[in-house]
Image (cartoon, rainbow, N blue to C red; front, side):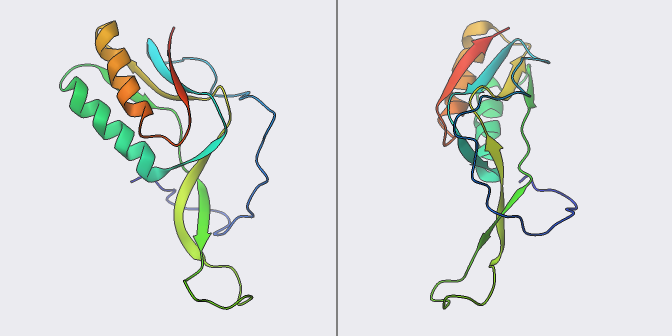
Length: 136
């Protein structure tokens, strides 16, 4: 699964999010011909990215190229169950990627349009965000 090799700060503040804004970067198709675009705000975990990548690879079999445009670099901490209030912040549990509407999540190229759209649609089910398949 995806996680950073080295981080400057082990634990981050929990950000308030960007409720009203649209993606200002990663909002155009750069590599492939078809892409999966996020339509709402969410945190996407490394597990969700890996699940989407696997379902696409299995569906397209050989041929085609996939570009995952997002990377989970934000650490999420979890405190143990039945831990009393106080006693500091919990240990890093997993990593997420902060997603805003309009962000391109995955791109694909080298396969027919119908097959590409179906693969991206299947990958979209794995994310905790509404998605849309777009064409260059």
